Structures are given as structure tokens and as C-alpha cells.
Length: 110
Image (spheres, rainbow, N blue to C red):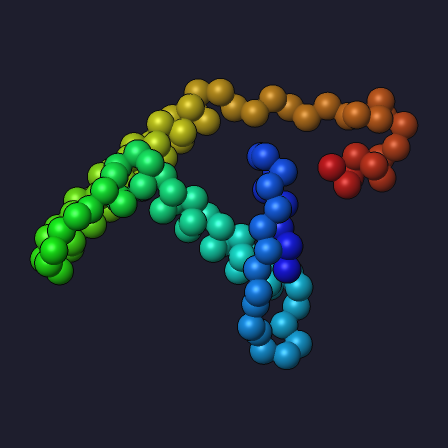
């Protein structure tokens, strides 16, 4: 399967093992979920130092990862609250017809 990142046009390919008869939509949904997880790890690395770990023991590694994931979770919760407040303050404008009222079938598709 090949996926194009809509932000930068970057192409990624995936090899998938699936039960016979699995629908393409299911594969796309699973890979989309994986993509969000990868973006989360990338944010944790860049913003919170997830990959800046030079410990020699499991306990040290576990403490580092726990603190980074706690900071990441707090940032995600704060971002969610800010986004929810922004949506309440500025409701989406009413949708206008793009077809000038000429085609109700077209408007129904929107």
C-alpha cells in the first residue's frame, strides 16, 4: 500500500499482512491510525526529548519515558481544552451553496 502525505506530498509505502478478504477501507483505516501514532512519537521526540536518553538501566529508561509521556499527555490535554474553547467561541459559518441554487443534488453531496 502507498500513502501520500497531504501536507508535503511525501510518499510512504507499507507492507501489510491481512486475513484474506479484508476490505481496502479497513487497511486504510488501520494505516491511518498507525500514522497518527507515528506523528505522536515524532512530537514526543522533537518537543519533549523522548529520544534523548542515555541511561544504562531499565529503571532509568523507565523513569525517562514515563516523564516524557506524562509531559506529552499534559500537552495533549491542554491542546484539546484550548481547541474546544476556540470552537465554542467561533462556531462554523453557515454553509452557502456553491452552485447558486441551480443543483440541489450537488448541494446534497456536500
